Image 1: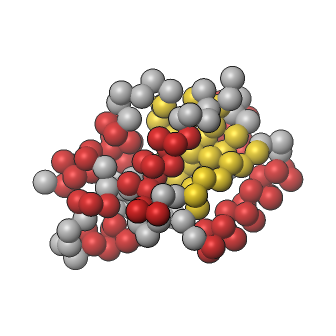
Image 2 (image 1 turned 90 degrees about the vertical axis):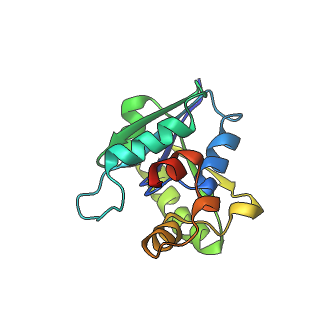
Length: 153
């Protein structure tokens, strides 16, 4: 069974995340969306809200589950018996950052990182951009899945 972990903070989930996950479904038997908990980070949305957004977005997809975790992603992979980490790449800066993490993970374990390029129509979207638009009362609706749009009304 091919199981992948798709880690992130998802503050909030964006259409870019959704695109990568939907495309990853055809590659893996199971995808665990893992919301990382970092006590040092200040989030716009609570952990419960972020988890609910993702669960609602993928409620009709049996191959997807959502969990929260602390610590190293490779430790979570070992715990859940997942051999892959799924990551999305929007641009060359993402590639350089993610490449370093993937090499480190590969050095520390046998976990393979699979990269998918974001679709052209979502490649500009990041959670930090969405948060900035939200903070400034901008039109964010075209950047996030329905679950986030409904929650913010």
